[in-house]
Length: 299
Image 1 (cartoon, one colour):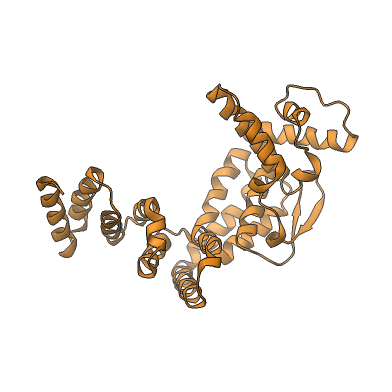
Image 2: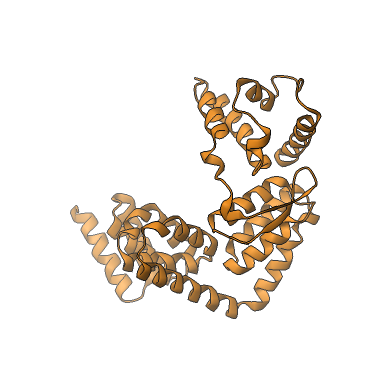
């Protein structure tokens, strides 16, 4: 460290040790901006968390997630930063994604810590959570933009409530299909192994086991369209077109593989560069519904 940075660091540590967290936040933030390291990240995140700024602490720590994962004690702190920010679903999904790399003891310790924090928060916020749950479960009564905003609150619910709310929204015919597709993918990542029913884009009830669903990003149709569009030299147009195609695939999930084919023809159809002709009436109906929902989402 340069002399000025060393002084800032020493002052920041002194403030942290005596509990002057606002002062420590300012000093350690300046140190971190001057030179980002894992050590400074952890110290600043710790100071932010102790001052009650859990959201800032969690987002900061995420910059060095790989380093936190390398040490169990640091990772426990990472869990606490995020439970303080009520990022319960994020943590559940993270633990599921690294499950294959955990020992039985590590898995038990991390899951128990997260469960304890969820239960503590639930018991201390019964009325608040009941109000949030009701508000989110009735978001289908609002316009699509209102649904999008309200549903984001679900990710700050304890996991048991998130799953409960998710199942309810999946069966609400007024919820936009893109939100339902995201819920299904969340439940897939959370490895939910019981049957879940949902009202699909076609208006029919379907039953799936989320844990057995595929990841959209790993499908041939997703890879084909992404590769084709990334060949364009026009970065702005490329990103716009890919976002439009990707949204349509998400809306069709988990049945996009049965409806869309990885072909130039389908790419032109999804980009509205070609008329929908030569397809079966069933496919044409799907495309009509798809374009209607895409337009509603983009308004």
